[in-house]
Image (cartoon, protein in one colour):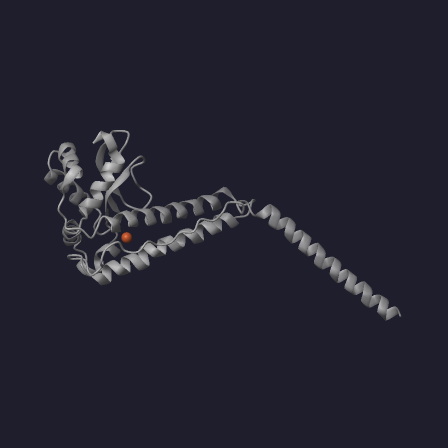
Length: 238
Ligand SMILES: [Fe+2]
């Protein structure tokens, strides 16, 4: 009888402790998830918009590795970082949020810039239409613009970064913008032509010869896509 009573009490104590632990856990969870109400965004890599065997001077092996590993990796990382932000405890220090926000910006800009980059490749490298006129009127000649764009790219060889022909709505004109990582872009710049200068974009085919890669990049520019972008960005200001 006494033993039965002790067992009952033991069970009751266990149940009590379990309930208390669960309640405490729920309280902690309630206080600890700062952003769990923010719905997650589902990011999916876009496929390459051209036949990867058809580029000149950029091999199928390089461009598919660039797409599948570097670009798709950034897309996957972005989702994982945002999940960490959603799960960050409400009592987390500001630097913890800041570190995640920095990584989020890197991954998001990497995704966006790579999509612009792939979409402005796969062409015949021959400029025409509104973009050709805009380049001529804003940079003097196409050659002057191309020289500045190429030299900006060469300045990043041996390191990493992006060269972006960007349209500024503020000035209603385009600039060749230098960026040594994914986070440095013209604040109001709308990308018109994007060149990846990270070594993964050329090292496999051209070693350290960034200039040879820039030559290949120019041979493959899809100017129709570049033209579409400037018409969309500048509209009646063209
Ligand atoms: Fe890249």
